[in-house]
Amino acid sequence: MKAVFLLFFTFLSLLSCAQGNAPAPAPAPAPAPINVNMNSTDSLTDIAFLQSFVKDLADENIALDVILSQYIIVEEPSDDIYDYLEVSLKEVRINVSSKNIADIQYRSYKDMPKKEIRDIDTEDLNINSMYFLHYKNRQMLAVYMEDHKIASFTLVAKGNNKAHFVLY
Image 1 (cartoon, rainbow, N blue to C red):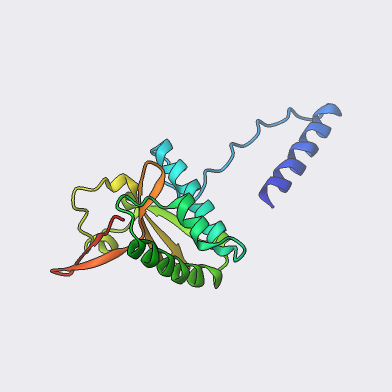
Image 2 (cartoon, rainbow, N blue to C red):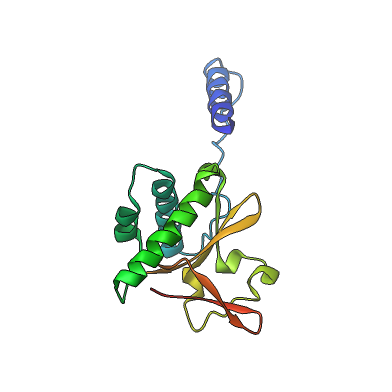
């Protein structure tokens, strides 16, 4: 709506200028995206990747094994790990399918309030590769990225009220 208004306002200003009234104002700068860490190109790339992951996960026509092969890094493959990941992806798919994916917010570790991350043990993992997906201000998924793919979407309690990412 703002873009339509801005375009209309610019048109009126140019029309006014052409009629000799007043000079046209400089165009307003484009607004920055909301809830995206703008500090890093990698962060923007990771978030775009996660948005694609969520979109494909919400599409029931895309098989879970296809999503697994396209989006998830599995460093120690086994039948058990693939079975676990397919069941886990199915649960995430159920969660995502009940939401308007356009309303999902993607936040980096640095953008999270301290009270929401104090119970996460980063275990020397790169905090710049940790993302949290929120829907209506509630966390729905935590993700750790490596080489622009998902290395983990599993946070496991490890004691002392701490949780850590389990890499596959």
